[in-house]
Image 1 (cartoon, helix red, strand yellow):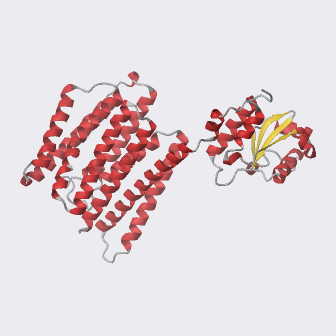
Image 2: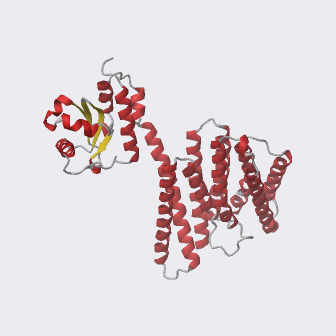
Image 3: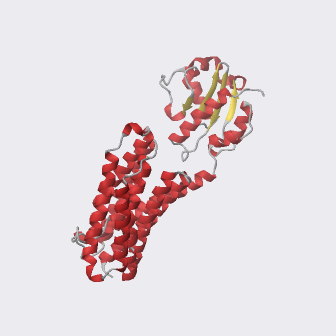
Length: 399
């Protein structure tokens, strides 16, 4: 089997798996949303195209390759339906009729037409797809922003950004447009697009983390592909590009699979706030007892002023008055290391092997002291500690 065929097949199979996973993730987040249904349908259609192509090229099945032209011809119609959902407006009836009839004609011509016209069909199909994407982009750009909610405008911007990423890659799938490309990159572009859309749907901090993680994955995959290509004695630029494309498609697919699996596992295990919300705890001590069932709070212990006599509670009161949560890593917390209150707090945390202290009250002194493992110490845990403190402060001592 030719190296180009192998690379094309692997990249497309990775694209099919990745897009199927992305569709499942979107459906799981919003199983009944009308817009989500349209997005999932479009992703499923493109995933079917990549799957059929990958299998057809790997096995040399010409009939299956021609069948793959059916979903390829229907992609502009799917993109137009998604555009309608994003804009909450029906597209012009003539556009929908052109997308529907053009897709059906090209699908039937590709699957049942004469083989001698394959090049002509590919040229028309590529023009039809690119024209469909251009029309959808024009509709999105000319939208009335004032008639849409802020989150809807952000969603449209995310989809438009994903489309801009994928269009140059789609061109390489058509040999008529890019005859010298050693590997078809349409599936790789689709993986990048859905990854970008999923990242853009998160919060600002999560977006930054997602972008850096994706860049790390891509650069690591490119280096891995280059290293694998170097093992070959007769490596050239085309072979190097094939190795890098296969490695990047595989890493992006594995990343989507890992993200989806982590989301499923996290949903099965209730978080700290979910556990508190579902519990019947009414008092502060009951809430603390409920918290200790969570891994990050299993070492949590409450210390009132009477049990802290050895650490001079009157000295600690002023120090704790303006503080909510103390991290041992932040010591001396903006004070001099020789400050008596700082010395006592450091000694208290060292004696209890604690990493954090939650200040429930400074007068009288009332603390939650706990040790958070290095594995669990992340920004989400710090946020959970701050929210838990607020809940505990508001909880009554007695029913």
